[in-house]
Length: 158
Length: 158
DNA sequence: TAGAATGGCGCACACTTCATGCATCAAATG
DNA sequence: CATTTGATGCATGAAGTGTGCGCCATTCTA
Image 1 (cartoon, protein in one colour):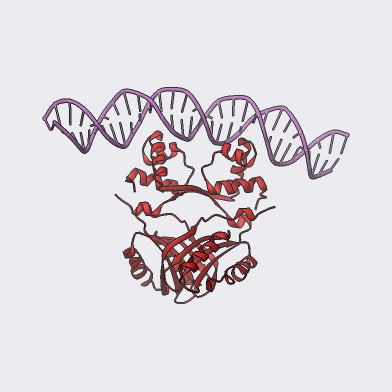
Image 2 (cartoon, chains in turn red, brown, yellow, green):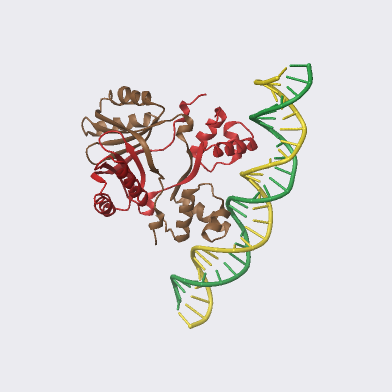
């Protein structure tokens, strides 16, 4: 857990917005030289504060027109069942995100799919038949109000 | 909706994994010249197939140790209530993602927070008191099984 | 079917960006 | 007070970027 000063925070916020910013652009934004930005960026990358850079693709433009959240309850909470379920989740590419949760459901999955048939396939042919799974409840996304996935770094001051 | 060929798909998949790939690296990966990759990339960006590039930050390294999913049910489904709720969601920085859903709950929020106190603050002081909100149910993330947020482009063939 | 038009391609090249060596400076250390 | 430590800007060679150009294959047209 390396120290992160206010220059670093400004850089992180900027790179969160635009991951392809040039060191020179970064320099102009935060008030350092480009070379220093280069060095700081490498430092943050090596320390895994920046875990990676990703292009954000428009799913609709590529035929992914459906987002679904799927709540899963396991049959029993045995380590064996949990392990099998994890393996299942990792095997299915359409499942983009998966979390184990407190509360009613044991797991929450996010799937990005082409259409309702794909959802039906996953739910009825992949999830439901799996022996570790006791209960499946899926919800379809009607609208995305917010999808920044950006940390509120403004709040931070060290 | 511009046409996307197999070269484009390879580039998109690669840039999804590493958003700072060089045109030359891209060229080596997909089997084109760097100049052509530059042109194709610009085309995909202009057409908004690539909607942006983002640095992925490690929340834990910055003190965000808690992820919560919050299910919201509105008091009534009036346009006015929906509008007020949207405004609320956009005002709160800690809410990273927000979706309107089919099913039991009307909205699903994802919040990335520092600690349980922050969650309590949001739920009890921001969401619950809001007149449009009838019911709030929050679940804490115990474990992230998968968090690629990457589209399964392998499937695509045009 | 011949000729023209179109569009995708690689190469060349001027320009920009990158990362590292180096000297400087300020703060911390002994 | 002398020394060490580490962050900084500048300079620089190497690498990356994007555009003009000519080439080629495919498609269109008469």
